[in-house]
Each structure stands twice: as structure tokens, then as C-alpha cells.
Amino acid sequence: MEIEYDGGIHIKGTDLWLDAEVGKDFCFISHAHIDHAAKHKRILASPQTAKFYHHRLGETETKILKFNKPAKIRGAKVELFPSGHILGASQILVEKGGVRLVYTGDFKLRRCLTAEKIEVKKCDILIMESTFGLPNYVFPPRKEVVKKLTSFVKKTLSKGQTPVILAYSLGKAQEAMKILGNFGFKLSVHSSILKLTSVYQQFGVKFKNCYRYYSKELKGKVLLAPPWLKNSKLIENIPKKKIAMLTGWALDPGAKESYGTDEVIPLSDHADFSELIEYVKVASPQKIYTLHGFPEFASHLKDLGYDAERLRTTKTPYRLNKELLLNYDLFKVL
Ligand SMILES: [Zn+2]
Image 1: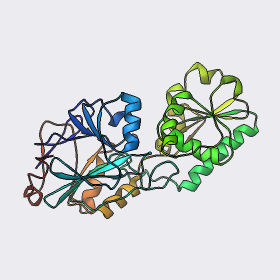
Image 2: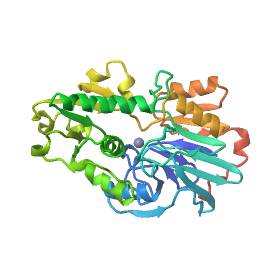
Image 3: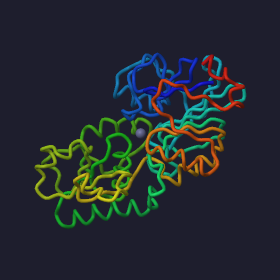
């Protein structure tokens, strides 16, 4: 069996792509962040991801699969299960001939308020993200991160200033809304975030103390905006403010300077280094392919005794080990 990674993951000899970056006939969408979702002819996705996808990229033919409801798709058993990344974010298990392949998409093990609890399934072949795959990326406990965020907001408000929280409009922003709204802070939320929040609400996630942004009604509120608005007139025109960016890259030395904000807070939707390793231990695969993030992560896994390599964009297909090659027809009929 051969895997190729060329603008997306493709099991050679099949027509199923995983998170392809360019249009395909049939593609699994792990979640609707833009780096994982191109416009395809037909998609396979969880109900939540399908909604976000249609919201962002328009209607398309869709095979919806709920979590943990296996389906036969062109001869193989396919199952989606939660990745804990954002609402509806999904991993995929493809099983045939006794061989199990899991592709994680983006994931995290830590619990949060707006995504499903992750599940980890045993598999033979694991294709995993490795965004924070260096040992120095270990996030502080969630309690500390939440404290840092709420203290920043409290302190800024107490000085009569407006706290501006920059957070990606899908996932991070809703998590911040939930954390701060539950604490009793009043939020003024940019419309780009509210549009996606309506999908959360359709799936039963409730938000307190959140209001549509109006420049004249900002006093005493926290402004929640996507990072691309940082240098906009909307934010520039707020007279007294302090800006914080929510990102896992907050752990980098000099992050405040590089984001140009007053504060950086390591609230992340990705696994940190220790979670990546923990995931591998539980899944106990025979073969691991890593993608995204640091290439060194595959070497760390090798040091731990795993057969691991990084997926690179290449025309040369990757060959799986002999044992798995016995099941070379695994995905042919997908
Ligand atoms: Zn993502």
C-alpha cells in the first residue's frame, strides 16, 4: 500500500483524500479551518463540520457521518470520532482486512468548553499532526491559562480601558466567549465571529453575556475580534485599550513583540508536545506519519522506538512496512 502527500493525503489506488488543500472528487474534512478545507465535489464530514464547511465554502454534495457510527463506504469500514480540536472536529478510522488507519487532523487531549472530548483508538497506521512537536512546547495547566486571561481582562477594565482579545473566529473565539461570559464579563463580539457562533448555538452550545459589537457600546465590555483586525481602524480608534492574542505560540520568546500586542496567552486548540507523545502511546501504531509543524517530531518518536517519518509533499509515494503491505489492497475499494 502506498500513501502520497501532495496537497493532501491520498491513499494510492483509492479516490478518498484526507483534508486535501486543492479540489478533489471526494475528500474527508477533519474540520473547517481554512487550511484543512478546500472546495471539493463531494465531502465526508461530521454534522458540525459539514455546517461550518457549507457556511464558509458554500453547499456541496456531502456524506455526513456522526461520531462513532461506522459506515461502509465503498467496501471499507469508515468511522469518525472526536479530535477535541474545535466543535465537530473529527478523526477518521479506515479499516479493512484487519488493518486500521487513523488520521487525526488537528487535535488536543486537554478538555475545553466548546469541543467534544477527544477519543483515541488503537490503530496500525497513524497519520498525525505535529504542530507543537518540540519538547519546549508544553502548555501550562488550563487553570493557569484561564487565570491569565481573566486577570488580564479584570485588570484592564479596572483601569477604565477596553480589553481587546484577538482569537481566531472559529474555535478559539467561541472558547474565549464561553470562558469570559461564564465569568460574568460582558463581551462585544465582532460579526465575523458571531456568524460562526450561530452554528455552535444550533448544536446546543450556549453563550452568556455576549453582544454584537457596536463601537458606541464598548464601555465596560471586552472586545473579541479576529487577529486580522488588529491593525484596522476599528481597533486603532479605541482610545484606551490593551490587546491580548490567544495562541499556543505565546510560549515563544518574544511572542508579544512579534504579535505586537500587550499580552499573549497560550490558549491553544492543538496538542502540546507531551500530549502528542501521550496520544501515540495510547494509539500504539506500528507506523506513524507526522505532518504539519516541526519535522523533528518524527525523530523524537524514533528515539522512543516507533517507526515514524514525516510526510512531505513529494511525488515519490511512501511505502509501508512489509507486514502492512500484506494488506496492500486495504483501501483500493474505498
Ligand atoms: Zn485547525
